[in-house]
Length: 257
Ligand code: 48F
Image (cartoon, rainbow, N blue to C red; front, side):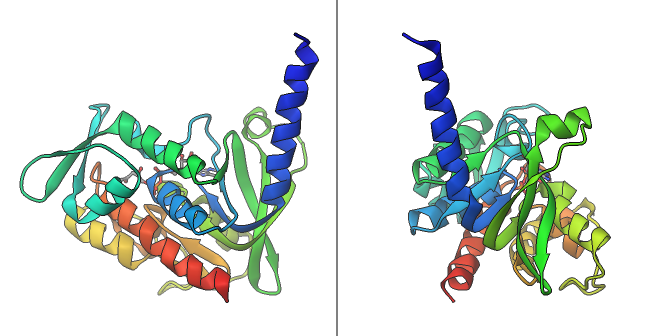
């Protein structure tokens, strides 16, 4: 056994994955539930999908359940998506299903990668590539470089479409709006800010507001609330899954044009 053979195996495979990501069909920023579902559905249809996740573990806000209690609740309206991703669940009361957050997060991650989604963890989207009034890709850096505050220049991936799936942060849309004189597809032309908790309205709005917010840039999941002034909903996740599924349909059409 030669140690450098192990190193070569890692470096060669990582560089091949990077090359695949350089010209993606879609780059999704954020590996939470909405991004993973959208990515998994699109990858199974043959699209070249890259997901960037700044933390060590993909899964976003799933792992902690509600206040660290490890179950989340999902409306049975989203049951088909759980089945499609092989996530186990139990009926709770009425229209609700209970899902173990650990199997939920790991199941979505596993199924997305099994379908070919190229997930880069420890990788942060720090800016966008904007050409002729259209988002054309992402500017990325290592999260470790960012955390250390080192002056290291980033790399760039091109994509037909970019998705802000960064949750409450709405990091991508916020950066686009702060750094450029642009008018977003929102009533004010700017991100409108998330409102307090009102679960039923919030769940519907997350799906309604899953859309193209600027040419080439889409929003899904919780970032729709921050961008379109929606309410928060806490640890109920049906809206996140349905948002991911709706986004996959929109992007399939967009990328096939
Ligand atoms: O927040 P998150 O889980 O996204 P989501 O799909 O789901 C929201 C729910 O988890 C929960 C909720 C349900 O009712 O309200 O909050 O909208 O995951 C977002 C992911 O994006 C990553 C972040 O680490 C998290 O894992 N992220 C945020 N900014 C960046 C990023 C960035 N600039 N680059 C890369 N990853």
